[in-house]
Length: 403
Image (cartoon, rainbow, N blue to C red):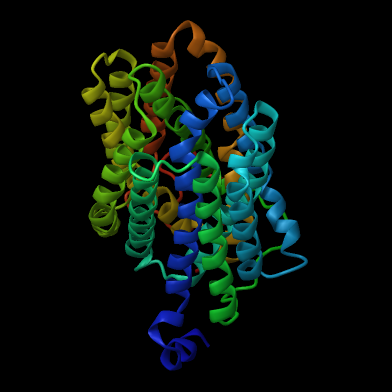
């Protein structure tokens, strides 16, 4: 069915292109929100590390509840649910600038976060279903490249808006969210409803043979919070980066990922998930340790860029799961894995926000310790993972379904 659809559809109306456009819509919103957050929260809402930690914990609550996407699939298919999620994300971002207060930021953040996290869970599910295992690393790399390109346009717009046009925060949020809403509506109108390749389980599924994937996902979610919440905050609070400086830093990251992410995707396809994950975690131990002791703003920016480059290697965790999973489990496990990754994320920002007041270095050293634990786990990934060959040590007694 899909082969016939692709044969007779214009190239731009294929499932892969829809994935790219939805990824661009999500990125526009999150890039605007991320680029402005630290300066908007400090300058307009008088945030300290404590309020920032609480906000980030609230932002992660919808991520923790991502498993509920499985129950929504009883009411509608994944494709329209993903588009509705993007609309929520766009609305939440568009109205953020009109609520410059602690409570206002908390509320708009939760709204946009519901859309963001549901979309991310559904994007992972749709990608792993619509793309075959052979091409998955490359397509996932291209998705990151598309996000990087959308980020460049967005961060470039933020930089121009603040440095040259002197636009207020509220209007930048409104334009960013509005652009994403418009792109999402185009996706809804222009693309057909693509058929499901395999009927997905409409219930929560936790399989013992996926235990290593769950563990790596949990550690990834915990460690990622250190970067998302505190790395950018470090740049603003300690080194005095302005909105335009942060936007330029994001532009550099995005520019690198445009060409780097597809290369990493192809590389993972050649060397395998085990080597890619080991390399990622070794690098992150060094980066987080560097954050803890850096005293120079330029060196800190270098660590920030290097840290962001390692994000593309997270492709390996997704393709590892694709290789070991029953195809009917993908939608359910995508939601469950997002919830697992956010268990620590709900707690870490607020708890570490308090720790930040005493010792910012301790926050980043904790991140280095998390990366070291992930490295130990990655050594248990087989060289050729598959159903029935999920781990090197600690195999489950659960029988994997036949290929």
